[in-house]
Image (cartoon, rainbow, N blue to C red; front, side, top):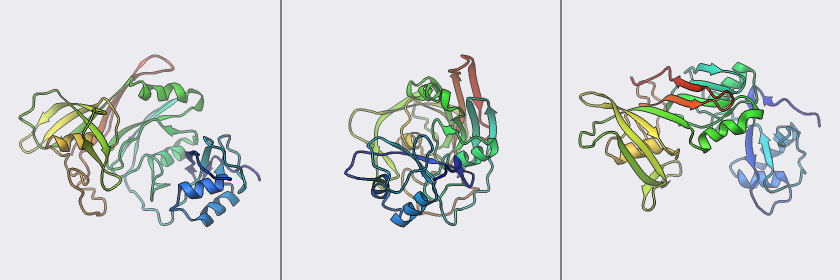
Amino acid sequence: MPDAPRTHAGTPASRFQLPAGPWVTVFDALCACFPAIAAERWRDRFARGLVRDANDHALALAAPYRVGANIRYFREVADEPVIPYVETLVHADANLVVACKPHFLPVAPVGAYVRETLLTRLVRRLDNPALVPLHRIDRETAGLVLFSANPATRGICQALFRERRIRKQYLAVAPPLPELSFPYVHRSRLEPGEPFFRMREGVGEPNSETVIDVFARGTDTWTYRLEPVTGRKHQLRVHMAALGAPILHDRCYPGLEDQRPDDPERPLQLFAHTLAFDDPITGELREFTATVGPM
């Protein structure tokens, strides 16, 4: 079968590492690991060369399963919602790309979103299917996201996050906390909550830490500067809610609100505001500031 392009309809591939299991073929493993996707859809993807190995070679339907194998596949979603908000390209060089994401735009393909993601938009805009996000921020959060643009230097760029050599600061609008002394350090144990996409604070040794300071004081709300020391899912949102100051317009914390369409007049007031690190290739200090901020 001839190789297909590294993008499909301008959409980059999703990546998946095959876990341990009893399967005979890659097809069997994918059907088991993604039960929400019909087997017929997987057969169609294999037939069109949309399931590929780590070297970007199309896999046959009978390709043998191997634990730990890295698979690339192209997702397709019918009737994908259009997100009318536009990202800003902040920086681009041969190794790193920084973009400022608007509210409601996912960083990478997930759920009902494939084309309408920051990654897919940047792949098209920069004509670089090798782009990979080095970290994620929530769909509801706006602000800076850092991408690797070069597979040859990706490992040392990923180490910035793994070794905590990158400084990230967020701005958040929330109720005042006059009883606290700032800067305040909040530590807790975060664990999966209910439903599955929420997190909660549990009992036990802390696995999350946030440094909280006041950026500006208002009458009804304050703007806080949040610096996550760890990078747990929904960490900043859970920590602020736990302190009694949930971030303005948070639909998940402290309680889950009824599902409703995204409201551009009431976006979550959380912004990935700055990124700072020593460039792992050149050694120079890199500092970036978001082009969006509190309303």
